[in-house]
Amino acid sequence: MAIRELTAVELREINRFAKSMCANYDDHYNDCVLLSDSCYMTYGFGYTNTAMCKWFKKAVLPIEPGLERLLTDGGLLETKPCGICGKEFPLNRRQTYCSEKCAKVARLKSVAKNVRAHRKRKRGEV
Image (cartoon, rainbow, N blue to C red; front, side, top):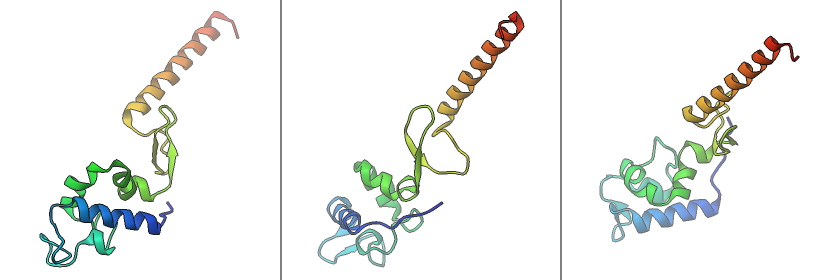
């Protein structure tokens, strides 16, 4: 899986969003109140799931769905559309559907098609 780098515009948007929306960011010190170090999100130390501040990830990021999608696994990885609903999801080997629900729908469609073909053969309509 190829991981792409964030563009300068995306980095500026993340920085602006973290400074304006995170309750733990202190403008006076330009730092995070919870961390002893600088805020990960405003200084670009880590825009990955592992380096992301837990508060930012759980409480602040869901406010902005576009940035959430960008910073979670789905945004930085290559994606492909689901075979049933068309929703984009990260490439994961041979995975064809975005969720178990879509996979179940596809299985049911496949079974129905096979049953119809079997009935047709049994009646001699081949």
